Amino acid sequence: MNLGMQIGQSQRLEQNISPQMLQAAAILQKTSQELDIAINEELSANPLLEMDDEVPEDTGAEESADNSGDDGEIREMDFESGNLEDTADHDYDISDNVIDTDMERRLTDGSYDEDAPFKDLNAPSKDASDEWDRPQKDRDKSLQDNLRDQLRDWNGNSLLVEQLKDEGCSEEHFRTLVQYLIDSLDEDGFLQGAPDEVMMKMAADRGEDKFIVEMERVIRDEIPLESASMPVAEAFHVLQGFTPRGIGARGMQESFIIQAQYVEGFPELTLRILKEHFDDLMELRYPKIAKALSVPVDEVLKAVRYISKLTPHPGRLISNAPTQIKQVDLRVERKGGKFEVECTQDSWKKVKRLHVNKLYADMLTDGSKLDKETREYILNNKRKAEEFISAANNRFSTMELVMRAIVKRQPAFFKNGPAFLKPMVLQDIASEVKRDLSTISRVTNGKYVETPFGIFELKDFFTSGVRQQGKRAGVQPAAEDAPLGPAVNAGEEGDEDVVGSARILEAIKDLVDGEDKKKPLSDQAIADALAAQGIQVARRTVAKYREERLKILPARQRKLL
Image (tube, helix red, strand yellow):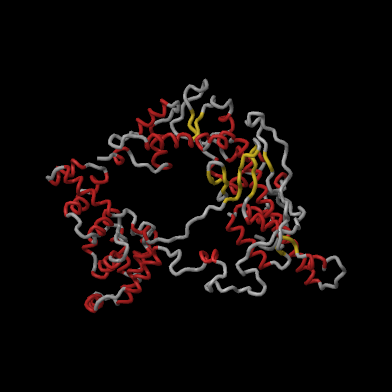
């Protein structure tokens, strides 16, 4: 057998993605905040990429003629290009001309000031409007961070320390056990067990901490807390003594019981209901509870009212995780009978101010004597700067192109509101703008548009629908909603064979809001009421929308006694 080197030929089909395409796709997917960070990082890393101090006064396109009729209604859906040159009308190309313009001076916080490049963020600001953005103590602390602070301040008494030593657990090790429990909490403040593979590793590893293994078994309800060893039981008790009350529980029932023990004058009957009849309580089976406890139903109802003093999600009371802020990227306005689409983000203005450093670029053409290494360095960074600017411009123009296509396909939404949103899938817009499906997915994820009816994420315009029985010959009703293609939307408005999920959701919410709280509507009753409105929806579809989309409790739990 010949194992030496050999020369051969083969034929295969493969697709290679250039670094430029990868960069364009990455920038296209970024949110506004992420793009701002990417721009600042690129400015720091590439000396040939610069940002102008000013922006031009006029960056928009000329307004087109008014095509509206005398009555103000739209004859044809026209769109303004807003503040963008429609660079998305052609595929991304790294050879696109780089826009080199002057932009208006951007307000800075000192990070771009040559005289003070390292501004002291803790120093008092001269501008009172800047005070809100200064670092604050304990700002954006997570639930775990707050509990770690309480653990650092906790001091066990000498008797506890001696008992722990007798069990083979030092005070330092005990703090590690409490820390493990803190790290096992979810955002609601409840303990979550480790994955099965981690447990298997713990069981197989003889050197694993026996107390941690035991705590995991307690969390999984494999052994009761009362039967656990002293260090493990005490670790649970220490965590459950932290504030807010109710954290460190293994479920809502245990959390309620922990909270009740710290409420002064909490009724013994209510505590007994929590301990012995929690399942019946959750299902509002008050007569059954009254019979089991041999008390009148009125006494049970009075006892249950005290549960309103307890919180079902104690962890969220002190969890100050950063709030997701919706930054509007686009705006749709109706002006003169036309819908105009324009970019609104400051990041768009920042991109317009980007340009290649003219001094370095001229060194390549003005006869400057450059060694090979220097010339290659300038060439590479010039190419990177041009590619970054072109990719960033392509991001905004593609966003605007997609939004204009959405407006074109959803005129009823922008004229009448969310209830008139028609079923639409990503492929509809991909075919409209002649872009790949993955491109549309990136553009619509994490990008927000301001409309006359509020702020929406672009992906919110893509909804499913429910087919209607008897609207068109040969069409069968669908029990479950499913994404529908362009053919579904064919026909005149009001004569379609599907109803969008947005309209169904709003109808369900209106029915629940207006129901008799003492006799709430069942899912079948809601389906019948929708049918009376001309919307054919199966009962299980109503249940699915109610539970998953609207987060509304079933009828038996909405009943007010």
